[in-house]
Image (tube, rainbow, N blue to C red; front, side, top):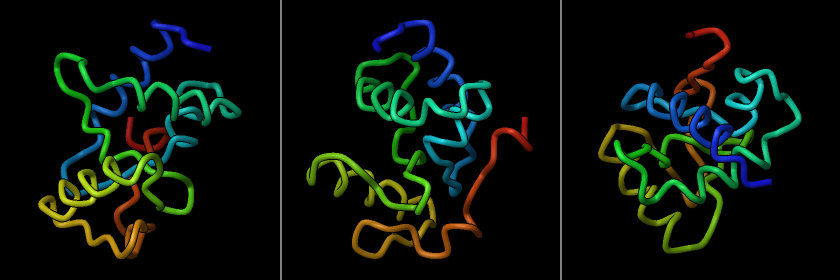
Length: 107
């Protein structure tokens, strides 16, 4: 599924994740009323590289707090998160629940 309208909604929520916080693909899907679309949110995030305004893709991780995707992308997102004060060990956000931002509750 490559639905430009769905992707646009995903990007709108991703842009709202505060600096220094993270959310998950599933949390975005749930906030959109599409609880079983976490994989589609992941696909949308993988395609956001040329969006204007930019989408802070580093702030969207899987439900266990892991950064996913290709190794180079993970390394770049890890650096961005660490600049925002989010500790990442290996490819996983340390204290994930502490940094988790739930769009269903925050919006």
